[in-house]
Length: 268
Length: 282
Image (cartoon, rainbow over all chains, first blue to last red; front, side, top):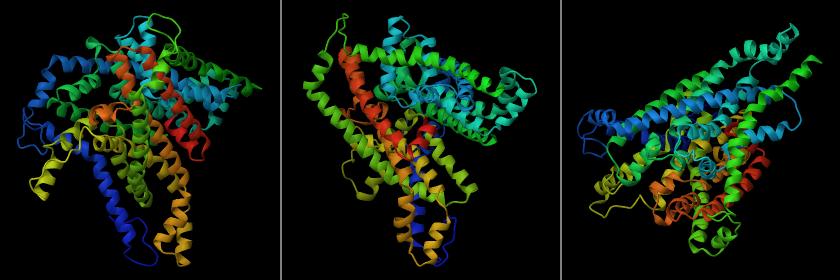
């Protein structure tokens, strides 16, 4: 558990012991929510305690048999899949244009495309609400897909930009010299090589949309509520033990996406 | 020639995303700005901003927002630096495994975190039970629905955001520098304060600014883990929007929040470590 490099002189260094202990306490703090919700989700029906005293799967059964929770989960899946598709469709070509292209105003266009990440989400949420309200489109799945498209496209662009920088541009040049059009070289040479980055970007976009709560809270209505919005109001108004089961499932989803996404990113 | 034509064609690849963002990102932002000058029945008004100028509630919330954001930044830095330092010292393979413990919380829903903390920090939660067992039958310590609760929630949220840029700047340092200093007789403390820390300042600055910017617009954590006194600007936007239905005021607060964030974002883009953060996170 000691530091990676042995000091040249002294064998035991109080500084490195201190930093190791600190680091592990902080890692423990970071992992605390995940360590808490999983055991709690197997506790009993009326229990909201950690550590739990019984073992039961009733909370999961209740989640899967409660129409309200399932309906919001399905909405979340629909919206996240739509937003991911939109973000990939717009973000992948955009990243190619940014990394490989030269045209006037490129810096400004790039900054503009990435700026939704930096704008406070509440401002975007309010703007989306006012905008959709002017078409009477608040509370529609399509409205939320578009809003989440705005939030996730920059992430796909950033991920794919990193992926493109690792792909040798000479391969594309070679294809063009041998007579391929720009489109052909993009589809036949670049895209196949970019697959891992696209996959990682898509996974992260999916998770961002699936977990997004502020914009969804502003623009959805009771009938089109997503899972995070329902969780938010449940935590706020009538905290229920089912939340432990849902939280565990969400943690599992995050873990899988985080591991698979990181592995895919490493491939590029 | 051919290649140049191809590069010009690149603009076509950027066009769809640009048009999309103009239509559904820029126009909504414009809607917020114009709403802040428009009454509910469509006339021009200064009333939104005028109300904020005299509102005691707004002054309090504005001050809260800055105070909470500053505190969250400092506390996050205190926790993130030792962790980044430790991670930087690990061999690459081991570091990759340990990074999962930073990445998983980064990708965990803020609602999952809030729920877990509310159970753990509650009056009968596991922390208070532990404290009671150690300290005897004292009153429960209030860790929720107050500033402490907001701080715990926000610090937890921001540590990964701060660890990434600091780790990047620590890993960019040549390992030969501390070795040379050690051979010449410097102690560990001296090496840290004279070499490692100063060289990691770009990462620290970038991480702090990023944390500060993100916390200015925080909504969920203060709403769930804070009390009435811990309202932040984002919560006030929601309050005016839904509870008092005063749209011009809600939009005016959002505009001020946007302006405040943009000021710090432009600062972030000017500092040495900022470009990498903006490149990574946006």
